[in-house]
Amino acid sequence: MEKFTLGLELPTDPRWVNIAEKNIEDILIDHAFCEQKAASSCISLIVQFPEYERIVEVMTPVVAEEWSHFERVMEHIKKRGFKLGRARVDEYVKALNKIEKKGGNRPTQIVEKLLINALIEARSCERFKILWKNILDKELQLFYYELMVSEASHYKNFLALAKEFLPEATVMARWKELLAAEAEIMKGLEPRPDRLH
Image (cartoon, rainbow, N blue to C red; front, top):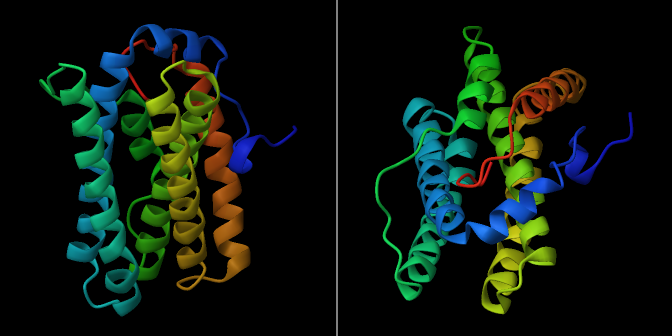
């Protein structure tokens, strides 16, 4: 099968951008929560694996960057007269968490979490690219272009970091499995008007 953006095996349903354009309030609100969760996920890695200097070193600036993204999304929300409201269930991330292998030694656990995070960043990057290229709001176009570049960097960093804990062949074999599983998850999810993923 042809590989699409960032190695993803299945591209976003083309209907999604049309839905997103008509529901930008919901997309912005869900995006804010996604940035919160991204920061929390990186903090969680530091909390769970503090004995690994590289985890602390690499994740610390990502936490700050993800939180700054949250603050910037909040600026767009407030500027448009919207309110954050309550968090929504992220069915995509929920499904990804179910395919995470539990157990094993510490490096194996780290790699599994890093690869799940890399998947989320890759899909987010793909969605930001779609928004950048398709929405009419010029200010949001620029915003999503900047975030697309940032998420691509995070995706690459997570993948590269995983290779510091296990042999590259092992990491890439698992990455291939996860890409296939992510494609199946995407097939089972209907495009939602109020979700970034």
